[in-house]
Image (cartoon, rainbow, N blue to C red; front, side, top):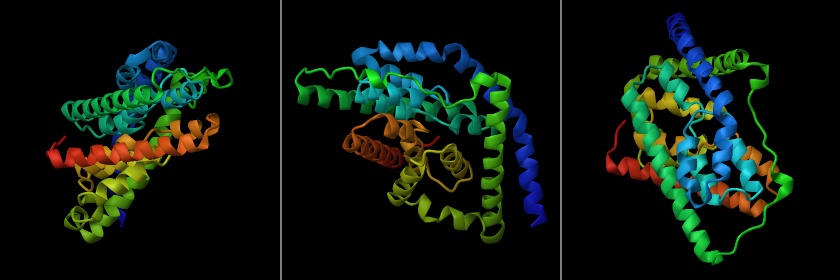
Length: 284
């Protein structure tokens, strides 16, 4: 037990500088470009899913929340909203960088998420446009506010420290639990877990990914790096995870049945895409 605790603390402390520098860079980029990205999304029109898929992949803590507000105001389309949700990485990128996952792996994962987000968004908007036969929805002025869930008002350094401390604690806890299991039952047992089995793994990971908390993306990314999750299950969980976007949508969009349909669509798309990744044999 002492060895497990020491190994967990040692590995975690090594990650701290990388986590802080990553979050500092992310906070700087969001501070400089966040409002510009939101203006771009507003003006995107029919190309919204394409632009949203790219911009959604940028690690910004408030972008999926802002997209929920824009959709509730009918400023962006449902396809654009889903594209942003699917491509949003939440805490995946900082964890991959801090764990030295490799530039090629990071680019592949982000690229697949962006392409799936774009394709799903364009398809959704195409189907909706055909069903509505060109009719446009009116803007909902009451929902055009933009809410943020960061701590940028305290400065980028303090905000970066806040995110670093939060994710560091999650990583310590998750790493400790995994190291404990590996120490007592072995890696072979983990490799045979239900999470790493076709279909079931994607279904469970997709459900975990939808938990509106940064811990979900941390858990899924760590489980993949540890070899517990396969590529398909990992992708299923990361695609269905939209950060706090879903929470904001539930609060600002008054149409409850529509919200339920959006959540279901996000989950089904994530799971189906994860199964496609697994069947294709794609590895990151």
